[in-house]
Image (cartoon, rainbow, N blue to C red; front, side, top):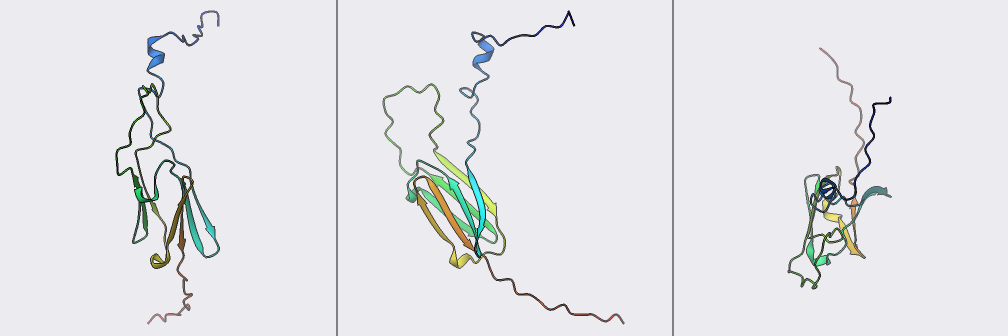
Length: 134
């Protein structure tokens, strides 16, 4: 093991500068929860910085589509950002949630959290029918 070399990261290295999110931004990982509350599925997603008018929800088949986009350009403060990760210009997410009563879906947006309540359809228990083989 005498010949092994352990290199320590050089904080002044030019390569280390490009390892940061500053030059290679990653997708924003929103916080999303889905849970059952009574006879409904509830989706809660953190999407701060939007107005409720910026958010659109669609439910088609068994797909819930959540979109948020700033509709007007915001006046940018006179700052020169080196890194900016607290700002989100748009958001889009699709979730498959089955057996939902689409006519009774409710949504609310408060303090940066979107809460969508999706009442589930009552599944009727079907009788088991014995089929005779001829």
